[in-house]
Image: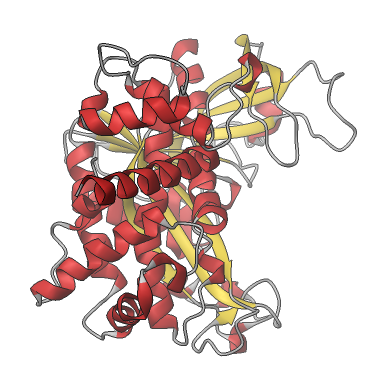
Length: 447
């Protein structure tokens, strides 16, 4: 089986034993992604070795992620265009009173770590890996202070620019990279900065900016435009809304916008896209219709290009699934470690575990050809097949990647009705855990 340890081949802590230990810890975390650290290892000796690894001053989150990021860039090179999807989450360790070095979260009495992640994603929605991640704490003495008076580099909003700069520094020049961000990313430093020729952005706007030529606001101008198209998109199920088909009206226009504050006098050309959900009679009382105002640095003239840009923005969902997998799947907020440094080492390993589980889930949605042997060998896929299809004879040929992921989902609890679509990351990772346990016992009894 292709394992997660391959992602750490280039990690080097100056000691071969530590390099090997990282690989074994990551494999244990995949097998036991929902369990605590002691439950992930066989016996106190292995558990103690894992704790020693995390407390070793030679071990840093940067070196753990460096190898994975290099592997990600290799995967990026296989594509003409990749998306750099950014988002922020908070990791809440308030319950763990003995953990030192934490900062406040939304309020003074909640404590934890802030995390800003950039995932490389294909236009089809397959996560290629982490290309940037920032970790920081909010100091209690800054609680309630206005950030506008601080230098930009000290503001939290600088995370967007740091991530873009890191992305642009490692993505090859012949790959078109498009940064994707939510409303929080709509800052002047992102919109008006100089960019390499292979770098663009698509963000949902927070600010209704002024158009240079007319002095009108973007929203007002776009509402005057004729409808360019009307499309139907599938809106996925979430915990707060039911999946549905949304009928969307699209208007777009290219113009030049003006900067403000530090960017006053600066102008830049953008394409603005307004997306409004039209048929809202079936929405529940608390559900809001889709209403997006997007801007992009790409000059879009054809409606096909505009629809592509809308679909690119929709891939932002994948970064939310990544953070969901990290917190709900790998349960990193349950980690009980005494120092922030140790927490960040463990989180960095779980970062790659969460990506691996997400990658596997979305891989099955994209590939239908007979290529499963690149992930499972013959013995492994046959065991999986019998776990998922107890009464069926084994097929003569290996199943497709799509079928492999579907079977993992089935043994992980996915029902598989026609209306259910594809297995989600939760059922796939639970199925993978069951398969790994069976394979481990099969190895024991074959020896």
